[in-house]
Image 1 (cartoon, rainbow, N blue to C red):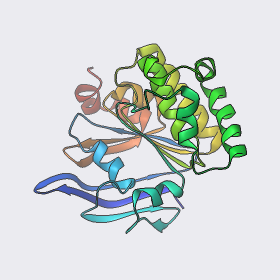
Image 2 (image 1 turned 45 degrees about the vertical axis):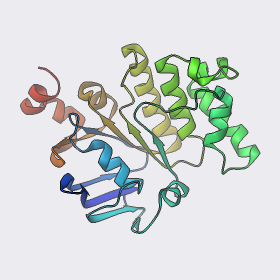
Image 3 (image 1 turned 90 degrees about the horizontal axis):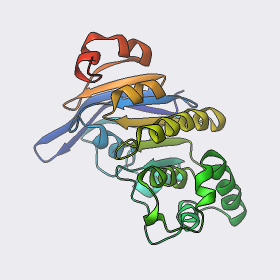
Length: 236
């Protein structure tokens, strides 16, 4: 049984049909890239999973249990973590305080343990622990946003445009860490990205969205060799 499954999911904003019949699945320990240009429906797909927007059709389930009727906080309690576009750290709080906010629903002992685990993935967060989050570089803030989302008992991790505004070397490092975290903690990771080349390097599978529709899906290596993907998304 898949950790996450979307079957024929639709999302509408008034007359705008943002997501049109998307179906996909993610297994534990797997990184899947959700690739498309701006306005393709990537963020709307993530928001539908998080119950931040209502679906206009289809079904979303985790471990076979439907998410119908759940609120965002209910979905979070199921172990769904989210790192939004633009990072959105709490700038006036320290790095350590931001991480603690991510684990607010857990015991003190668990939070302390998770902070150590997160800082083992991102050692710079330990070095900057007392520093205000707003004073970090873009790449450091992205690491903090990812670390904060990993603080609770996360089983499914959704990321929206994590490469945006981040230096290429840091982006590559973040990609390596995402693959490591997925394997070590058996997380399912859904990576929504315009940077198709990087996303397909990180992920084992890819899903291509165009105007809300799923147009291609498969192993990342196969998608990278697809002439249409190379022309439209890889600049080749």
